[in-house]
Length: 133
Image (cartoon, rainbow, N blue to C red; front, side):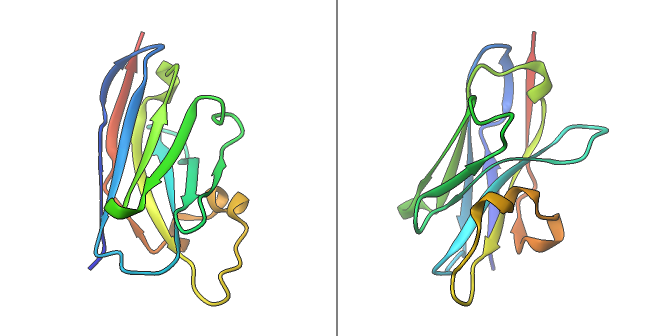
């Protein structure tokens, strides 16, 4: 059974940094993409970044690419999302989701963040990030 657990959320002052972790257990698949989304109350969820651990390919939301980094530790089945120069509007629940890559493995990673929740195979419960000014 695949489980995703996010951690690292909390309170951070505006301008500060935070590193979130998404640890996957039971994820015994050869190829997949792990994406980070955030849900701000009253708005639609927003894609932040994603990574394909098998290749290292990444993608970012255009508006966030200058302030967020993503990386993966394949040995730990963990993906990290690092946010810098955080703003109050970054406040929200951040969660990770897994999209399994099957078949010929061809995928356009740039389109991952625009996919609907239902297209992802697994997702975590999320971790709250609150940026205060």
